[in-house]
Each structure stands twice: as structure tokens, then as C-alpha cells.
Length: 183
Image 1 (cartoon, rainbow, N blue to C red):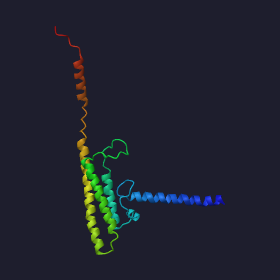
Image 2 (cartoon, one colour):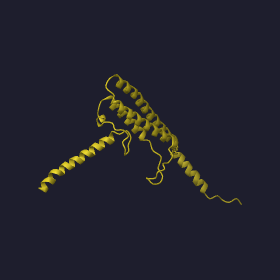
Image 3 (cartoon, helix red, strand yellow):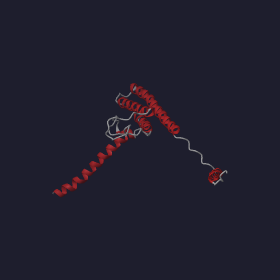
Image 4 (tube, rainbow, N blue to C red):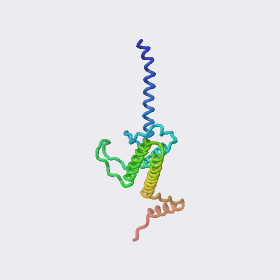
């Protein structure tokens, strides 16, 4: 009897575990910012829904991924160290863009609870402008980081041509030849 019960419950436990893991991975995929704690709780259907709110959420998520792809300043010391290193100006801008995106996303979630009609359409229209502003800010911060990377990287020196290398070697060996002492 116990074997029959184990045979019946084992697949049920495996399926339940797989469903929980899948649901959690979908929740993580729907978050604006990577990390352990969710910033907002948008509905899972926003991953594929054609609604205006879902599209704005996905646009915000793409903007956050663009800003989140910027290289972060290296952390010194242990991971559990409480004191964070000071952020450079571009990293601080990126953090501010992420915070603005989280705020706008919370407003989008709240606007979906407004009754259908003119007030909801007006709220969504205003939020669309805010989403565009966040997208623009993310794009501009990303471009600033790319410019900084180009400026910080010294230009590669041009490799001398074959003729120049031969001339350099001849000059070097010319300096090494034994000269008779002036007597």
C-alpha cells in the first residue's frame, strides 16, 4: 500500500515542483530589474499580452536591461561588506534611471485598476509619455557610457610598416657597432 502511495505521489511532487520553478522563473523574467527582490508585481500575462499596459511594461523592461548592461564599478572587499564604493557619475545616472522606471511601472500597475473609460485612457496616455522619457534617458545614459569607454581607451598605436621596422633595426645595429676610439 505504501509503495502504491509513493508511486502516485512522486509524480505529483515532481510536477508541483516543476510548476513552482516555472512560475518563479516567469516572475523573474517579468521583473524590471534583476535581483532577488521583485520591484513591482506586474501580472504574468504581461509577458505576452498585447494590452497597452503590458507593452509599456515590456518597453520599461527593455530600457532597464539597456541601462543594466553598463559596466558597474568594481566592488572592493568582501561581498557582505555594508559600505558600497562611491558611484561614478554615469553609474549614478543609471541607478536614477532604474529608480524612475520602477516608479513608472508601479504607476502603470496602479492605472490598470482604474475603471475602463476616459480616465484610464488619459492615465495610460500620460504614462506613455513617462515611459518614452525613461527610454530616452536609458538610451542617453548608455551612449554616455559608450563615449566614456571610447575616451578612456587610448588609441592603438599604428604598427610601423615593414620598411620602418627594417630602418629601426638598422639604426639600432648601427649604434651597436664597434667604433674605433679616437686617439
